[in-house]
Length: 433
Image (cartoon, rainbow, N blue to C red; front, side, top):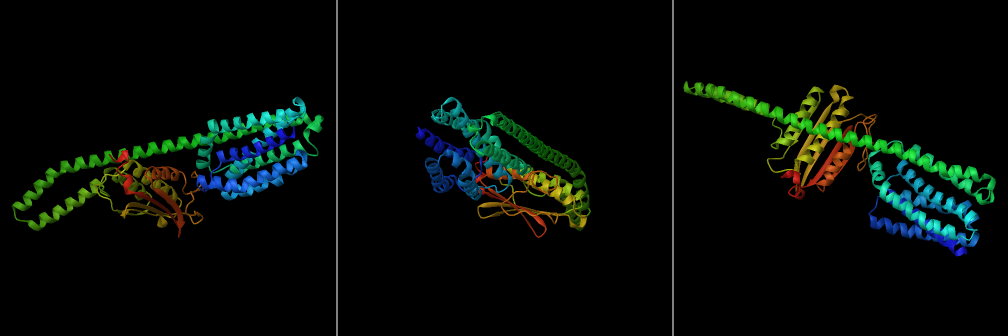
């Protein structure tokens, strides 16, 4: 009958990997991740199964943290995209759920299976796939979104999960198996009941953070659209005024030309052209992007910031929805960042130009001296204590929709946002039609 025990151990170890891989984010491609996992974790699992066969589950249960948990922790830490609280929370979550199933099936087999390991085997055969189905059906999508959008609080929750894992491992195996300590079984059952309740509390708290993030993101997108529409309406009103004034300008020019004052007429015409550019707020030929620049140039002017715009795009069709999202979020973050600086240090620049087959966008602004962002990382979401972060995920999503890339980093006291968009994606973008 020990065959059922050994098979259940092998089954459990395999499904611990499955649970974890459903929830964590690898820094490698899916193919490379599976290959590395098979090469490293395969032999580790077989060694632990062999240990159970040779030394029994009682001894291996006591040293399981050393023989399996810590080695797998080091391997997945190396492979994982996240290195801090997010990774440790996910690792502890998968391991604790698996240990919970193992402990429950051990107790059930002892009291209802006569230690024949059949109940243990059937229980694990059913419970692990059920846990994975629940993870895929209800947890995986919001949990991955949580990892992407929520930056704070993971370390504290990871510490709680690690504590519960150690607590469950100790109470189930030390000084002997819990099945040999029936007087402690009620306390053990209370721990088993308390753990899912604690997990539920944690996920409710984190899910509320996710809902708050979604709400803030939605409000910000609506505000962007409102700003663009208001800027367009203001621009149209200025153009109507300019058209109305053109009759007076025409009369004046006709009068000057009629009396032969050619030089005065030319000077007057130049002033009219300057006024037209001012009224239209002509930053670029695209009316949608121009509306964004009108709005934020006014914001930056009120902040007393030096604003440099180098916009080298013409009247060609562009995916204006995504580009407006990128520019609005980037400039909004820039405005937030320079508010805390001395007015003499406030400076923002925007460049848009074509480089071969790419449209290159670079937004640069002065930032607090303590802000440090490595290239390839995104600052924590939220503005409290950070100069940037909230709109960067929206920018990244907009760039990805156009098959492009986004990078941000700090350099010489400046926060730099680079976006590269392949021009081939413009013709296939509905927003450009």
